[in-house]
Image 1 (cartoon, rainbow, N blue to C red):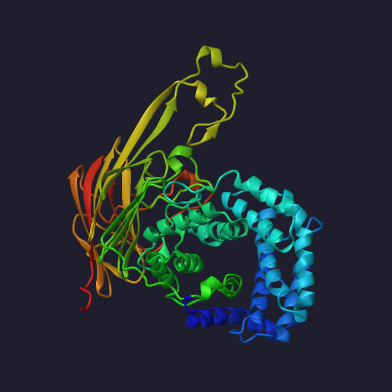
Image 2 (image 1 turned 60 degrees about the horizontal axis):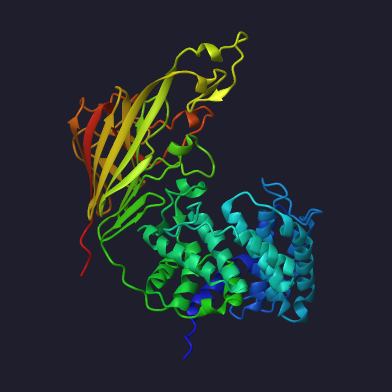
Length: 572
């Protein structure tokens, strides 16, 4: 017996598409000035899907057809002689154009089966796709996920306009191997690119090519993402190597992937995730086209599985640990790329946050540790060790050098020594040729994750330098028990403090085991976050915003910090 359709889901998807398409159809001759090529293609796909869908208010609408043609003329005008699209900071970009061609090809598949009313639309889409084919066939990429977006465009082109050269090129890219690690994370570790690029592209390729291994990669990524879903309906991104590492990312874009695989595999955990992804409503206008092209999405979800709590997960490849319980959700992170590469760079994991704690509406968004050591920036663990099922040790040792005179054989009469970077700065001093006097500083953080929060033991060793532990709480509450020091900042010494939002709260209590007394509220020179010279030399920062509570001092120090989540008992 076939699975019944989820009519409520289908209607919600159609309404989301209509919210974009209906205003466009109301002014079908209005030129879409200022809309980038990717936006134009999304509009075209949504208009065609609305025309085709019986659940859309634009089903069979001539105005929708007219608006589609207006947008297609603008899209064709955005194509350069190479067939690639103009616009954006990536010049003559095959992968950026592939995003647009993917939508063009989906719209073509929908329009081609609609009859004579969409004949001109179908022809215009075919012309645009044909003009881009040559450049996509030979073009290159510059990020890992671009490979799969480009492959998806080539596969879609072959689906509508069969050409073995397209499949040969896809095979060449896929021969590199999909960049998914043993834990199910893509190499960029990014929720944005997993949800918007890698997963949808690999699902498409699995269908067109009949590649079960590509489908398996998506399922593995979605299975891992289950442990990265946070209580606020977002996906953890602190470990990402892309721009989402400093921003929350909603679960909603994962909806079609969790939904499709839940329906096809019967996985109740995926069904639960699909329901969570749709809990805030469906706003993606592109989903309507997906339901028309993949009718399985319209079937009813299997029964959701009950979430097992408490639950621990340690992702060894990303050095990310999570513990979820009924009262708290804690994240510990020690997987920054900065200690190895010694630079801040797009494409590296640079976020210095090493702990988060969720207690309902009370959220500790970020715990960071600054050190005044040669302006080398905040603590970013170079190593993470799992001590027990729920406890971890993060470690980083920083080294800086003072350089001795050059040996006789390395000296030059003209004093013109080669420019070199010694890890902190660059100068014409031939640093690698000089004897060095090293100064080092080691930070260790042990985190014991509990059902009601976490216990931290922080050990700062080395020369006597200032340090500050920063706890950034999500706005909505006020720290009680800490001393305000201005600009949304508070000072905590060894007394307890509580951050309360409604009936939810996080309690913080610190105790010094070794070292001088902690700095008081008059030491604003210590109680601050320092992003390090990689940011400050260009006038930048990666500082957090929110309610920031500091404790600090002049090390060496050993201290403990207890973080406790307190929430009212659930109603029976």
